[in-house]
Length: 128
Image (cartoon, rainbow, N blue to C red; front, side, top):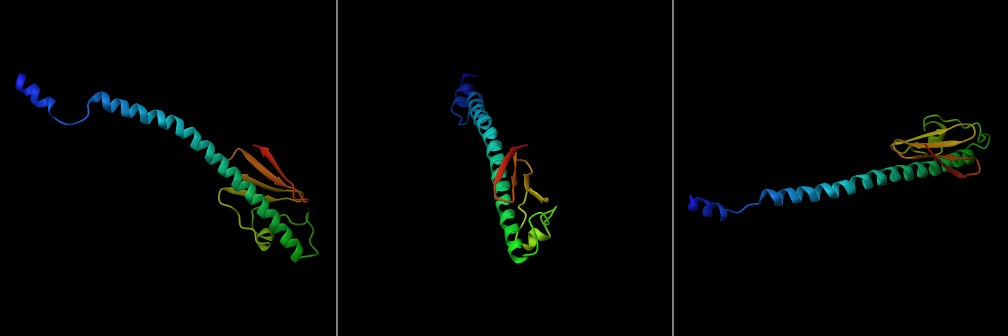
């Protein structure tokens, strides 16, 4: 019996306590990393929406320079196609861009804010 115990002590491997400590450390790291990842993802979606708002405004200005008889209020583009596309706008993935008579609105799918652009080019950030 004593010989069998001595043989088992010479075996290589991890003990249960060592494995539990490693799992606990991984759990602590995951508990810290996952909320930060979610926050960074929302920030990235907000930045994409802001960039889409700037690009849509530029597309409207390009459209107005090509079609001099048009006005800001006459460009109504509900889905990011049509007149905005004629101005060179491509809708950003994960961002819904609409152009009403008064505003360009860009809303990210999962972000915390949406952005509105006025005719003067000022961008307003609003919490959802």
